Amino acid sequence: MTVDSELYPLQAVYGASYIFIDRCYVFIDRPAPGSYRITLSAKQSVEEAEALRQLVGEFANELLSCTWRHQVTQDNRVAIETVTVQAIAGAMGEPSLDDLADFDFTDEALDDPLGIAQSWEEKHGRPSPDAKAKTASEPGADEAKADAEEASA
Image (cartoon, rainbow, N blue to C red; front, side, top):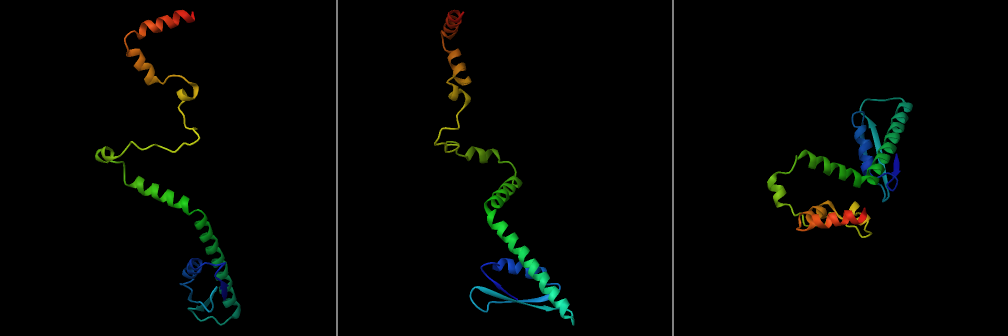
């Protein structure tokens, strides 16, 4: 059979050929740019023409399946690589104290040009709990708090 190399990438041809290695010999040739010629030879003698046609039909189906898997893999390559890297990083275990001591925490956590990532306090204009604790520890903070409570009552 001859197939178009634009429709069937070489990796898919190799994948389908590998599936059939136990049943037949597979010869892949490139008679012209843009096409592959695949020749199947049964390992056991097959005298019926229908059996040979069935073998070629099964190979064509497997080639189509391998081509589809190749396309799905190409479309999802970033997700596959991300999951793989996370799995390998997780298998390495937690970082040691020395690794954490050497880590540079000064970099910005994320790039937020639209200002979406805000704390609740920043969004509503209220002081953060750290700021409240800091002002409470300053001298005269209790009197200012009492004055504010009297004014609101």
